[in-house]
Image (tube, rainbow, N blue to C red; front, side, top):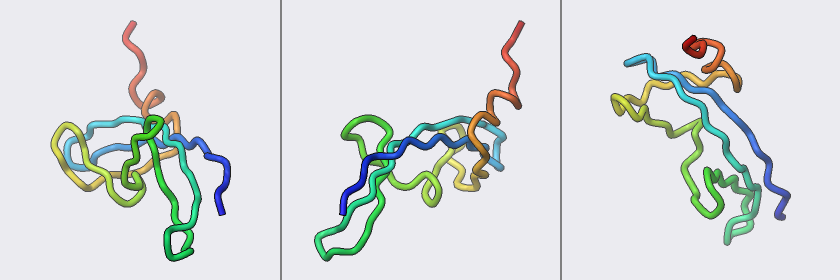
Amino acid sequence: MRTEPIREAYSFVCLRCGHAWEGVYEIRHALDAAGRPRVDYYVKPGFRVPSPLTENTCRVCLGHTIRILRPGRVRSAHPAPR
């Protein structure tokens, strides 16, 4: 079982320091060596990362208490400077 990759975007905010960021991931569904379904996340072609929904770390304070938001929430929470 191999399906076409899906692109998903997420917004994140660190509940420890308030840093917010967005990420776009390519998600691929496949079967592992034992025939069980698995999901792999990629941020760049060929660069696999852990699921941002279960394993995420703030780049500023290295905190692990992260809230996941709908895509586009970071930009709307931080308007561009004039």
